[in-house]
Length: 145
Image (cartoon, rainbow, N blue to C red; front, side):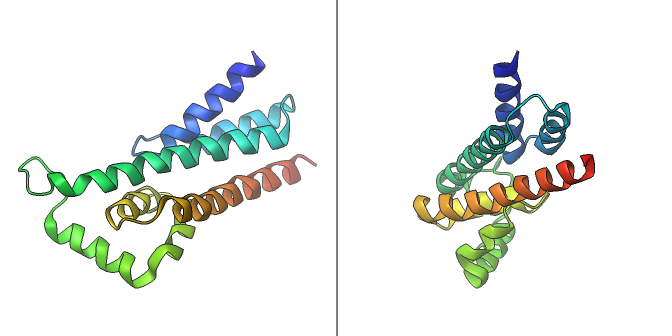
Protein backbone atom coordinates (compact mmCIF):
# COMPACT_ATOMS: atom_id res chain seq x y z
CA UNK A 1 0.00 0.00 0.00
CA UNK A 2 2.79 2.44 0.88
CA UNK A 3 4.61 1.77 -2.38
CA UNK A 4 1.38 2.47 -4.27
CA UNK A 5 1.11 5.91 -2.67
CA UNK A 6 4.57 6.83 -3.91
CA UNK A 7 3.75 5.52 -7.39
CA UNK A 8 0.49 7.49 -7.40
CA UNK A 9 2.32 10.65 -6.36
CA UNK A 10 4.94 10.10 -9.07
CA UNK A 11 2.26 9.63 -11.75
CA UNK A 12 0.29 12.67 -10.58
CA UNK A 13 3.44 14.82 -10.56
CA UNK A 14 4.55 13.51 -13.95
CA UNK A 15 1.14 14.10 -15.52
CA UNK A 16 0.79 17.54 -13.93
CA UNK A 17 4.02 18.66 -15.61
CA UNK A 18 2.66 17.76 -19.02
CA UNK A 19 -0.43 19.35 -20.48
CA UNK A 20 -2.73 16.99 -18.56
CA UNK A 21 -5.02 18.71 -16.03
CA UNK A 22 -3.67 16.98 -12.90
CA UNK A 23 -2.94 18.40 -9.44
CA UNK A 24 0.08 16.81 -7.83
CA UNK A 25 0.01 19.34 -5.00
CA UNK A 26 -3.28 17.94 -3.70
CA UNK A 27 -1.86 14.42 -3.72
CA UNK A 28 1.29 15.55 -1.91
CA UNK A 29 -0.66 17.45 0.75
CA UNK A 30 -2.95 14.46 1.33
CA UNK A 31 0.02 12.15 1.81
CA UNK A 32 1.74 14.65 4.10
CA UNK A 33 -1.38 15.02 6.22
CA UNK A 34 -1.69 11.24 6.59
CA UNK A 35 1.64 11.27 8.48
CA UNK A 36 2.42 7.77 7.17
CA UNK A 37 5.18 8.59 4.67
CA UNK A 38 8.70 9.92 4.82
CA UNK A 39 8.80 13.63 4.05
CA UNK A 40 12.03 13.48 2.04
CA UNK A 41 10.83 10.50 0.03
CA UNK A 42 7.60 12.30 -0.85
CA UNK A 43 9.50 15.43 -1.89
CA UNK A 44 11.97 13.41 -3.97
CA UNK A 45 9.25 11.39 -5.72
CA UNK A 46 7.10 14.46 -6.48
CA UNK A 47 10.08 16.44 -7.76
CA UNK A 48 11.39 13.56 -9.87
CA UNK A 49 7.99 12.93 -11.44
CA UNK A 50 7.39 16.61 -12.15
CA UNK A 51 10.85 17.14 -13.64
CA UNK A 52 10.55 14.08 -15.87
CA UNK A 53 7.17 15.35 -17.08
CA UNK A 54 8.87 18.63 -17.94
CA UNK A 55 11.53 16.71 -19.86
CA UNK A 56 8.71 15.27 -21.99
CA UNK A 57 7.63 18.85 -22.76
CA UNK A 58 11.25 19.81 -23.55
CA UNK A 59 11.57 16.84 -25.87
CA UNK A 60 8.27 17.67 -27.60
CA UNK A 61 9.53 21.23 -28.05
CA UNK A 62 12.66 19.95 -29.74
CA UNK A 63 10.55 17.81 -32.08
CA UNK A 64 7.81 20.36 -32.78
CA UNK A 65 9.76 22.43 -35.30
CA UNK A 66 9.50 19.80 -38.00
CA UNK A 67 5.68 19.91 -37.85
CA UNK A 68 5.05 23.65 -37.70
CA UNK A 69 4.04 23.93 -41.37
CA UNK A 70 1.35 21.25 -41.10
CA UNK A 71 -2.32 22.26 -41.15
CA UNK A 72 -3.11 20.42 -37.92
CA UNK A 73 -0.26 22.06 -35.98
CA UNK A 74 -1.91 23.60 -32.87
CA UNK A 75 0.32 26.70 -32.55
CA UNK A 76 0.29 29.52 -35.04
CA UNK A 77 3.62 30.77 -36.39
CA UNK A 78 2.91 34.13 -34.69
CA UNK A 79 2.47 32.49 -31.27
CA UNK A 80 5.61 30.43 -31.76
CA UNK A 81 7.57 33.53 -32.71
CA UNK A 82 6.23 35.43 -29.67
CA UNK A 83 7.27 32.57 -27.40
CA UNK A 84 10.73 32.56 -28.95
CA UNK A 85 11.10 36.30 -28.50
CA UNK A 86 10.16 36.07 -24.81
CA UNK A 87 12.54 33.18 -24.24
CA UNK A 88 15.36 34.98 -26.01
CA UNK A 89 14.69 38.08 -23.92
CA UNK A 90 14.61 36.35 -20.52
CA UNK A 91 16.74 33.34 -21.37
CA UNK A 92 17.18 30.12 -19.48
CA UNK A 93 16.55 31.83 -16.13
CA UNK A 94 12.89 32.07 -17.10
CA UNK A 95 12.79 28.34 -16.35
CA UNK A 96 12.78 29.29 -12.67
CA UNK A 97 9.10 30.02 -13.34
CA UNK A 98 8.48 26.48 -14.60
CA UNK A 99 6.68 25.65 -11.34
CA UNK A 100 3.90 28.17 -12.02
CA UNK A 101 0.47 27.00 -13.15
CA UNK A 102 -0.59 27.89 -16.70
CA UNK A 103 2.77 29.28 -17.90
CA UNK A 104 5.20 26.72 -16.49
CA UNK A 105 4.38 23.81 -18.78
CA UNK A 106 4.43 25.82 -22.02
CA UNK A 107 7.67 27.42 -20.85
CA UNK A 108 9.36 24.01 -20.65
CA UNK A 109 8.08 23.23 -24.16
CA UNK A 110 9.48 26.52 -25.49
CA UNK A 111 12.83 25.68 -23.87
CA UNK A 112 12.91 22.62 -26.09
CA UNK A 113 12.02 24.65 -29.17
CA UNK A 114 14.86 27.03 -28.28
CA UNK A 115 17.27 24.10 -27.98
CA UNK A 116 18.02 24.71 -24.32
CA UNK A 117 20.78 22.25 -23.31
CA UNK A 118 19.29 19.38 -21.32
CA UNK A 119 21.78 19.64 -18.46
CA UNK A 120 21.03 23.28 -17.74
CA UNK A 121 17.33 22.66 -18.25
CA UNK A 122 17.36 19.84 -15.70
CA UNK A 123 19.29 21.87 -13.13
CA UNK A 124 17.04 24.94 -13.26
CA UNK A 125 13.74 23.07 -13.53
CA UNK A 126 14.70 20.72 -10.68
CA UNK A 127 15.54 23.69 -8.45
CA UNK A 128 12.27 25.44 -9.27
CA UNK A 129 9.99 22.44 -8.92
CA UNK A 130 11.79 21.05 -5.87
CA UNK A 131 11.53 24.42 -4.13
CA UNK A 132 7.81 24.56 -4.88
CA UNK A 133 7.18 21.16 -3.29
CA UNK A 134 9.44 22.08 -0.36
CA UNK A 135 7.51 25.28 0.34
CA UNK A 136 4.23 23.40 0.03
CA UNK A 137 5.45 20.83 2.57
CA UNK A 138 6.59 23.57 4.97
CA UNK A 139 3.21 25.28 4.74
CA UNK A 140 1.35 21.99 5.19
CA UNK A 141 3.44 20.77 8.10
CA UNK A 142 3.46 24.23 9.71
CA UNK A 143 -0.31 24.29 9.50
CA UNK A 144 -0.45 20.88 11.18
CA UNK A 145 1.60 22.08 14.18
